[in-house]
Length: 95
Image (tube, rainbow, N blue to C red):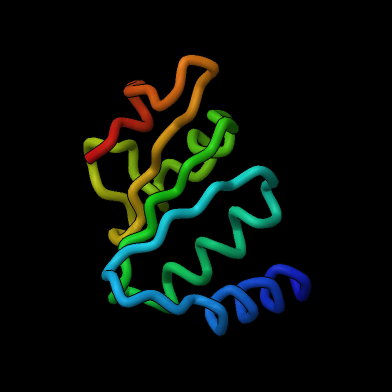
């Protein structure tokens, strides 16, 4: 858990945006958890999280929502990527 906390701290320190959102491409579970912590720490930003790991979105569905219903971390918008590009699937529809 220590590595996730340190990674999240690094993410929080490096987020520099003039917009009220940031886009995130997730490739590994470890980074996903770090970005969840960063999203909790920065409720003023919306996090558009892109990933090919559909199982990861399903596992954390209560936290990130399903694209239709907001999860426990309301500033995360989950987006699934497939071989055909962005997709609208039941658990990862763009809000």
